[in-house]
Image: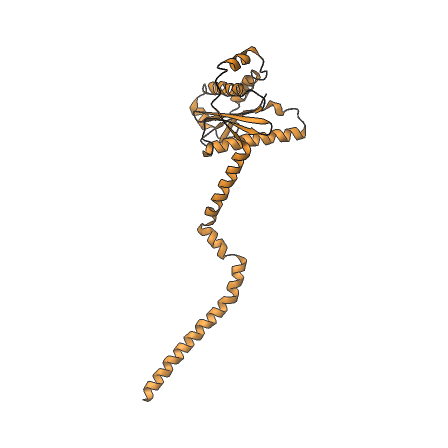
Length: 229
């Protein structure tokens, strides 16, 4: 079953449209779980936008579900399905969405600035999704039987691996950010160093003055000795 669909713009990771009717009339626990999957779909959109996922299409396993995504002309189509749902149908569904999306003016799409504000496409997603609910309809069986002996050339990955790569990437980026001049100023402005400065600064000043007085005294002593000769 197709459970969740998000359409987003790749260049900035902005989600444009969605269809998630399965969230309605659910218990609080189920709704929280559904919201979690939506956040994961948005996370995938951001990873695609950042270039962390470079493939134009991919299947990503998570729990007992699979995310399938398709990127065409700078637009990403993501859907969440049960793991038992035929992957060929899932990508047929995404291709149908892409064909309908291409009918809209490209200039209009690039003017959108608010997430999920392309509501015109929400109803289109809902309409196409209904065609893929029952995998046993004649139309869907025909799609499954078409080129049935040819495997889909789609890479499969795991959500946990993608999340782990993002965490590792952020860890590597953190030290570089900490080596900025601002971080050094924060270091020297720390309370511990301020306390050390309060203790040793007077000592250093007294030491310097003592050396100056000793040096002046030596000069006057030498002058006196020379004058008495």
